[in-house]
Image (cartoon, rainbow over all chains, first blue to last red; front, side):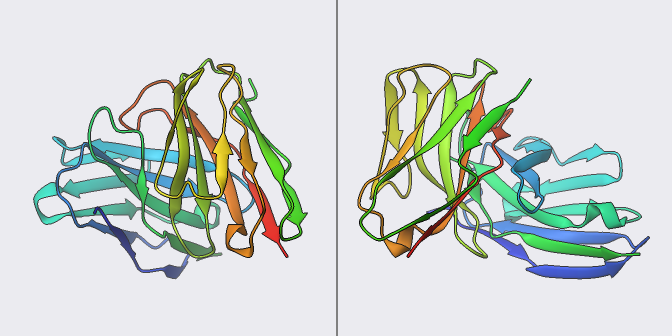
Length: 113
Length: 113
């Protein structure tokens, strides 16, 4: 059974720092991996999606990498801002026809000004 | 463009009561999903639908029922509410499978006392 683990569970950093969030999964047979952002009282927003054949994806200050063979992904946030404060969730899906995203528990990030 | 709309946002139920969580989307997506998120945990799939009239169980379906009579609506029914169903419920939709283009609603926070 696929399990997704995120480390750390919580992270506090001062504004301007670069930071890395970690995600690991037990079954390397994934179709793709996504990073979501969750704000309190709101739904999830997809940040980056990495296909299993890809090594990384970038969007603005965010960069996500994927090492499928080792079952790991990282989300790198450059020059963090208070507006980045949120919970970040990693999720994998097993195949193209898959309907169930398997989520980690998330990392709650707090960026202080 | 409203996206995915969930009602109500908050609800307190007594043990044994029943209720329906409403979900509607205006993007003409075929695929719709119900997830629950317990405190400090990732999201788990309850039920999903691949189109009007077609539904299937996810990882944690016990105690819930769904129906999909139209493309737009995917209500989740709780019969005989139990404290273990205290959670935040998210409805989502997507145009296709494989994890692409998920749109989440803002959630319903349910407490069973």
